[in-house]
Length: 52
Image 1 (cartoon, rainbow, N blue to C red):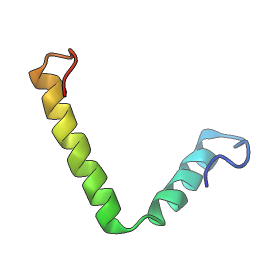
Image 2 (cartoon, rainbow, N blue to C red):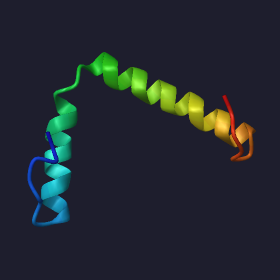
Image 3 (tube, rainbow, N blue to C red):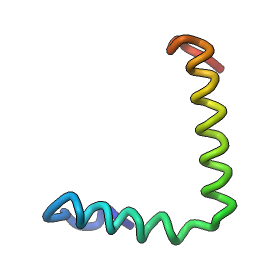
């Protein structure tokens, strides 16, 4: 995982995050992106207010 150690700089953290994300199955990432997109649209429609 990306947080087992303190990173000396931002680039080190970025590289660690990329390696971690690359371990996820593609379908898991696609589902997360699709859900994020749906939620973003709902947030915009609700003008930033609470939404379900």
